[in-house]
Length: 397
Image 1 (cartoon, rainbow, N blue to C red):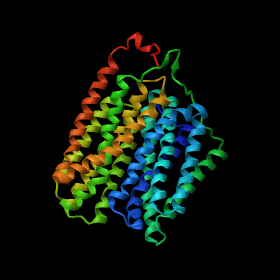
Image 2 (cartoon, one colour):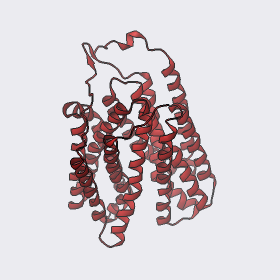
Image 3 (cartoon, rainbow, N blue to C red):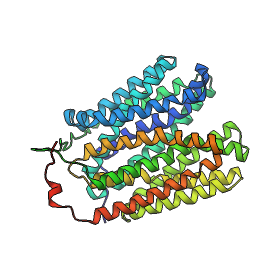
Image 4 (cartoon, rainbow, N blue to C red):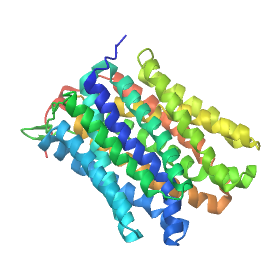
């Protein structure tokens, strides 16, 4: 059984990803406030999500170069500095002409950060990498529980959302100071260009399956985050504020799921745990979709979060496992799946809701869970097949 050694470098990496989670989960409640502040429609305010999806694509394209050129340690710290600059700009500048591009730019920094973190944990912890990646995501989700609370406090106090978001500057500053005075340094990592005499070797079919798994389950997570509140209002009669607060049950479930899942991943094979996670998500959806009781619906969302918690950590760990010689590139290309899922998932679900109603539209969720399960089954078969020797040779550019 693999053992997870949490040294000071690992804790620093966890804290750095937690800082990004603080922004990511805190920015969600800010979008409706930007809508009201700029007197625009929800669709226009939703362009911030589109900008972030575009930023994830750009980030995935530039991350391998930046990690290779500067090393993981410098690239991660540089990304956090970029996040600080963007947060200050969010607080200082008003108007969609500023906030929309800033949403894309800060996501570029975030994707470079995620890519470096995932690759670093994978290299540092080997067989225990799935547990380390899951724990890191648990820290990010835990920070995501704190951020909306802090922003809500500053809004309730009459100071607006900007002071709440600016607390992230203090958080990142504290992480940097602790790392400096405790002399914890992030290693540059064995970042390779993955090029031979004939060019770069393809990532392979097994990686492609893991990539699509991330896109499919990411669409589930994004769709629930954006549209579940509508179903709670329309079907269960919850208030706008109550329905919005109920969505935090998903985040709470994800935090608990990743906290427990990190330990389970040391004892249970990744694909087996992935199937358990899919079944848990399906059970949570069944509770959420069939009930008309607000309390039971929230319990269903919590169960959904428990299942959703392990989808991404296991899939990205498997993606890196099948291409062990190209971890940075594999992690960067994975960001494209996140961009597609968070850009297309809510859009498809919303368009379907306009045609058949939000309740029937949510039947897309179990379909996606079944698709993810089929992909995982095929991935398991692909991972057990021997790799032809020719596949290990450099391919023509």
